Image (cartoon, rainbow, N blue to C red):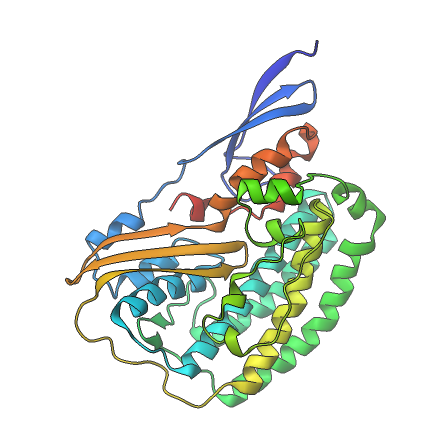
Length: 359
């Protein structure tokens, strides 16, 4: 009988950009069980609603994550807008949609680079991050920030994108698309890359449902669910298909994210073509009273925002369920039976954000 041992994995690890901590139960080189430990960097951001004005909290929520910070701010603002019955102007909805898809591009390119780095393909890592820099330049020009953007406000957005800027962004994205085709072709076709991804980390459709998987993790198991199809922001006017894969492995998760990169460019193209000329925001008068929740699609998957207001400047409660938190049971599932050498790669395939998880 093989001898069992417990090996602590993380929170610091040379391959992982995130301080995730797992206790791995091993039999020789095979993982029998993985026990996640949550709370290493907990910052208590949700509890700040008791101290910060409900308007100021829009900027606090952006600090939950440095990659999908725009969508965190939008999610929080959407709950307060729902409570106060505010009708966000259509131009603001379209601008939010464009920034959302730029966030998806930025996040997926970052993930592809980290994946390449995990299996030692440094040239591919640098190529993905070189393309990602162009998205960050676009963010900087349109919002003033590269990590934290602070353009969401309750009732709309604070900044506009003039027609010249939107036309220039579309030209840049068209050029970027050619570079992306070359880089992503390597992920899809290179023998060495495929040998590290194909058949590794199987998550069946049944297991994905049982574990409550979200985002590309779920769609790579053949489940066609995407919160953008609920029609929030300007997605109600955008024509796109949910990208899925029936591979159920690490290669499938890579395939879905690559598909979503090109899809995001097409969504931005449609949004720019249709963007109406309206106001950017409406005034939020008085204090919110009531409760509301919203669900929306972050790059890593479905996020859930809940706010409860009591009619004063401070909320009673603000609760966030992030996609990484929802995907942890799936991670535990795919690690069972995996080889110890594949653990860093499998952790990366859920695209973990521990700052989101330990908010």
